[in-house]
Amino acid sequence: MKKIRIGTRQSPLALWQANKIASILEAKGHETEIVAITSEGDDNLKQPIYSLGLTGVFTRSLDIALLNDKVDIAVHSLKDVPTVLPETLQLVAYPERASSADILVYKSEDIFEKEHRVIATGSLRRKAFWNHKYPTDTIVDLRGNVQLRLKKLQDNDEWDGAIFAFAGLDRSEILEELNSKGLHYKVIDWMLAAPSQGILGVVAKEGFDLSDINNPECELFATVERQFLNVLEGGCTAPIGALVEKIDDENYSFKGAILSIDGKEMITIERQFKANEYPTKGKEFAEECIAQGAAKMIEEIKKEIGSK
Image (cartoon, rainbow, N blue to C red; front, top):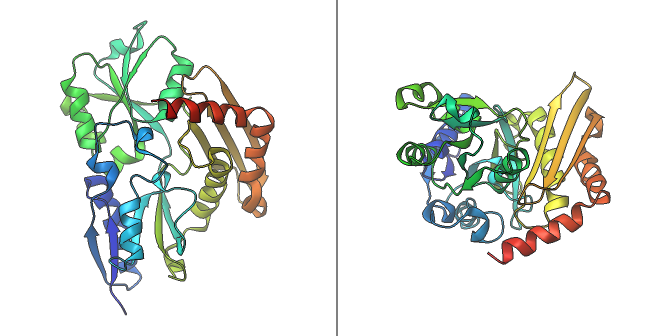
């Protein structure tokens, strides 16, 4: 059996994810090798993510490695993977979903009593949701891997807190260390996750079979959420949230939202659907949002991002 070369970004979290997939593959009898590759998004920490161009700043280098046969598969946090992949590449497995939640990491309980806070995040979605709920707060840009972002939060006396994905801190085994760093965290239960947040995605050339490590329910979650994103986004970075949750073996719920960058406008949708209906539901839900005015909102977002 051929050794599977696993391409990954070089951050500690990305390496954890790659090793997680390696362990799953090895349990199925595959031999693996980790190949770490630097990404454009990791190299450039000075600009906000949305200003680096179209989606895919964290995946392009790995796409190139796949196309040039330097690796056999690439492992990603699926929320970083564009909904349209380069020709001949495809998602071949969705092995695991952890928590989809966002969390607020903060220094003091006083944060909840303040009338004005300074919150750090590099995500347009998180910024828009926070601005929607707390319009008088100040949002500052925060880039880098999980460890670097936490250090920036600790070192900046003016910052009250920063927003992270629960799965990222949990997989990096950092959650239990926060107290020792003088930090605390709280799940932001009113903030809708990025589409596919918490899901690991495996990309390979078409025809590469990894069905033996695929989780069909994770594939259902990812398909609906990414389809919703694809129809709304149109190739630009936008503040969009989407989450599918299981009700029972036959029924699932969907929540979706799109916001203006300043958070003042928000279009939301909540629906239920049957498991066998999932292949087209993301498109259907996105079209309902478009009927409510989402297309106009996307055009305004494109103009605003283009002017920065």
